Image (tube, rainbow, N blue to C red; front, side):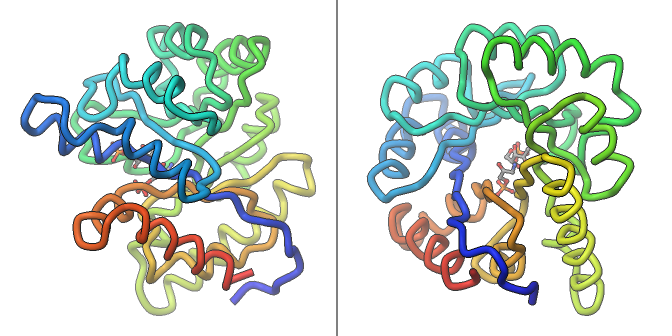
Length: 247
Ligand SMILES: CC(=O)[C@@H](O)[C@H](O)COP(=O)(O)O
Ligand SMILES: NCC(=O)COP(=O)(O)O
């Protein structure tokens, strides 16, 4: 496990996308992701994360305003690097915007953003979001080339995609964990705040939470799944306790 050198509180952003997935399965308004956001606020979560996908398969445009109106928690809007999403972000002015890669046919966000290869596409989006006072984060793989690209783009935050770690078993998991820990340390050394998320569960969260440089984890799918059995509030509380025990 990573050395515990930073007692600072690790923020928990709760991604409520998949409450909307269940709602959308029937096309009505239940379960409402806004109610989930209110539970996150009541239980002491540090923020709401929501990914407005191009195909609107879960969160929809009107959810954003309703979420912002319902809680004072900072909203982290996950968005593809498109003109449409930029306009929506500028209109809603969330606390943070996390630029993620998006493929219409993918089942979930399969990997990190190619911040290096997409520099020219990302640069104007990052600068317009920044000028609007929105804290920009780039959802990248934990590797030096992507981190350098984030630095060149002037992003104050990166979120490391933990999907490979979450799916790895045995020794490979330790390899993936080290990759994230090393890049978190390098990010902080270069003035970037590192976050992490994707595929985190009660079983795999603690080694990630123990990485001292990480400032925030964003967790959604697993919490919504657990909520079916225990309720959302106990699921978030348990995740919070596991994170705290790891530091
Ligand atoms: C970027 C990311 O990791 C999140 O958006 C999360 O995975 C929930 O959305 P999807 O399941 O649609 O990718
Ligand atoms: N950016 C990661 C996120 O918001 C949550 O991912 P997941 O827990 O739904 O896999």
